[in-house]
Length: 232
Length: 232
DNA sequence: CGCGTTATTGAAGGTCATCAAGCCGAGTGG
DNA sequence: CCACTCGGCTTGATGACCTTCAATAACGCG
Image: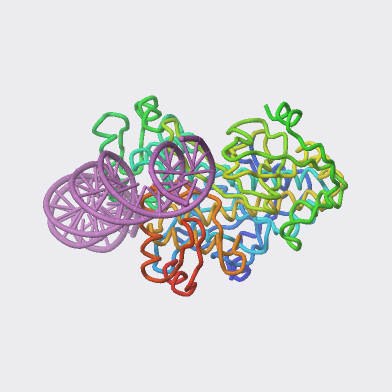
């Protein structure tokens, strides 16, 4: 139960949308919380801790401050499809309907800001700009899902891994290096592959000099052009 | 250019959201056009005609009156992923951003209602209920996309076909029979399979007595329970 | 430094794609 | 009326790509 967890672990810091956003220009949450003056709370989850489950009531909307989150669906036999990774600055858990369509877990120790969904709904009823922003955020998720359907339905294993690397490079590269928060299995479940296939593709890219490793999760792209060529 | 086409082919019927909706209760479009009094126009496309292209400016929002539409993305080498089929009553082409993220084509001869996107945006600025409805429609598309990512990433060929049949059964079965508007290649491109694999799966289901054919596209489900069992 | 977790690599096999041939049904014209 | 045609569908044979199973290696956290 989330409420319970909050009571026991919440940092109890009430903020008014003034915390430095991870993506100052594009910040999708601060724009709202700042504008309408909503009360946001910070909260932390440990590695692999569940944030909410599939089909749970959607009581809160979240923004990653630090860490990383995976959103996923499961089949009854345990097969998993990760629909999205949420990195610092990203909003997740926003629903138009009553429940979360995917479950969410912290990939590593993670701190989030959260606001009550009801207060956002209320703000949207007063301020059309807020309503517009909520729509735009859902539309942005839809765009990602549509791109990902193309990847899952029609790209080869190598193409999927190339697309993944370029996405992560864009979203979390610092000084030309990316520190992946997720394991090979997470990557596989995101790309519709097994972890072994992901590992083989990365090894091949390494052999070809397209990327370099410093530890399995620290990757440097040495030739973005050739990676783009692998991504049709 | 859509405007051009409209001038030459439009039926020039201006309606005020009073056309009998295909899904009376759930009608997502009439609720808006009726409520705000937007002007809707009817328009027809012939089989395989393009309605709009990928990355084209999103000037109109559409609702299928009769016929069927496929929304899809292409890779540079022609591989295609169909993201959704739009059947009578369905709204499609709704965008929060400036452009269409997928192309749309008529699968068979199709008539649509359309309203200018700008007028919807304007209505949303005045009436919060309209803004809420636009958001809900995009969220509904997102839900479908998330379910479809699970299918594309993690289900077997037979499971995909079973899911497809149950979806189509729900959406277009009349008197226990469904008349599929799309060919095997469309189904394959929707499910991330080849048309041959789709055909083989359907043949197997036929052999097992789970479905019956009257022509390749007229299908009767004879045992929904066993089909559900194939869909984890 | 040591141990458990995570990643890599290898070998074998299965599922689905590809290539190919034939069939079916609807529309057409002799 | 029926042969013809053409697009769509089915079915078969083969093989590629990716998964599965297995063993070793590397990492990282205490």
